[in-house]
Length: 374
Image (cartoon, rainbow, N blue to C red; front, side, top):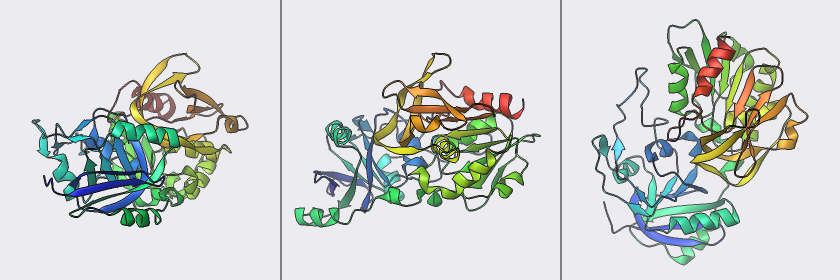
């Protein structure tokens, strides 16, 4: 690792933090968010929901187990330690970079980021930075790694050029261009509307034994019904759900059918918007593997993995055919909705974990068993 490189992270509120660079020498900008997970950086970095975000890690030591081989996969050929085919974050912010020591390590975190042209900065007090983001809210910023130090004048000029990535349709950049088939020799087929799906969702759906077809996020109703689906899943993904206009229109028409549906994270927000509900941007979002969610029907609390910056307005659900099923125990935001009549549910968290607790992986089996096959 080259310790001579300088790195700077600057936020739109004027905060300027200098440290040492690792990964690629590059200049990137995006939405600066934090994650409080202690493990799972290969999964985190490849999660499409982080597209065009600069991620700050509160846990101080990263890289200790290196980066596993991409060739380690399940029986369906899906990599076990990654959530997509490449790093999706724009930049990585950590306190300390550890030398890797693990049997499965194929390369170091520094080498991986360099290969994927993603810059990183280390040596920062990431917990103090996180407190600032929690206080002021998620901010735009830029991260630059270079041989020469960036002057204060250059930083000020660069901050004037920041552009909010959430103003764009981010999902368009992480959805497939055409359908992708996964054959399980089943009589049942699920259509997965891919808004930036994590491999973990694919793994869990295929593990139930059904066939799966991943389709682009802007697929029409006719495109989807052509596969004669037993059920439809709308995946997670990056950015503002309201930018997925075609997906929302398609979901609105699909809600008029009797096909069971499951929305995950962004997918839940799309279901709510399709039904006439509304969404809003959270102050600093939920990005961790320890969010407690309360089931309002049973009183049970589940610990969940989350990664989202938007949420559903609770009162907007009242005028729809949905009801709120789950609430976040910390801030009482909506974590799950359920249709009052049809077999349509949505959860704000990631039941596939990857990484995180396995408390709610049963939702995949339940959806297939009770909705698709039942």
